[in-house]
Image: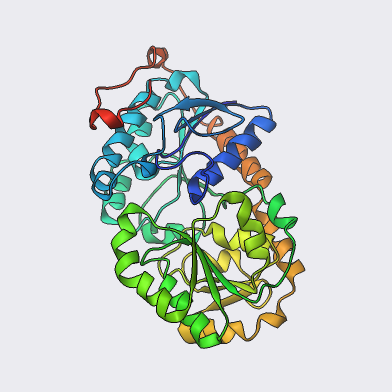
Length: 375
């Protein structure tokens, strides 16, 4: 198949550090190419992939935009990028977009080439739900079953739930050396609740090491709330780890604390930790029960007291069970599932419109010149 994969422009594919969606896209593209498919990846120009790279911007937006620009300029740039990609629609058998609800209008207006939209974000926001009502026929993929619950009353064209996958070999091979600490990995923001992780460590009497990114939109929260809290609780903040540093960081931890307090659509941190043989202690939110098995690969808790109590039960968890569970989330299994989803589309009547095959072009930029798209 000729497959177009569309990535957000916030991070490179894969990212150097944090960037869950982009890491999944990178793993998927490489597996599809290995499987013999002709893949074109639309992503920032610093991306590295086995696919044919079609740069959308020279550098990732998150590396050079202010908080205001991320909120006001970046969304408009993504619409501009999608318009440019769909001018090339006839070059592909299927378009696979990871740009959430922004893609729906383009997919609906180009029925000759099927689009599958994988939704990586939360679906309980008004802006997202309005778009679903306008474009209910676009083929959708969820990354967990729980993710769909926010739109359970909508008549949508769900094609499958495809759990995220990664190339986990470096995590399986990581040296297991209990460093006597708890770890928190991800982003510093209110939804991820690094404050709860700090309190679990304080009450458990075990050091906490935090490897996390601070986005431009979360700088104030980090400076005003989290920095003072970490200092008072003796938390070691490492900043954002590079990808090759993470396996040993997980493997040396006694447990990963995952106190995410929102309807988490997936949570790559959990499968990374499990692949390194490290159990996860998490709040019962979103996809957590679909990834963890309580008492086998970690503990699923209902509140802060439960998180603290779980630390005292870590000796019950066999690291081998964690690694076995992580194998369900390999990049190969993910790619196989997507190939099935793509193939099913061609069992339906499709009419290819040759008018879509015009030369690719870039619409007039709707962002400042310094953020214009790559040609």
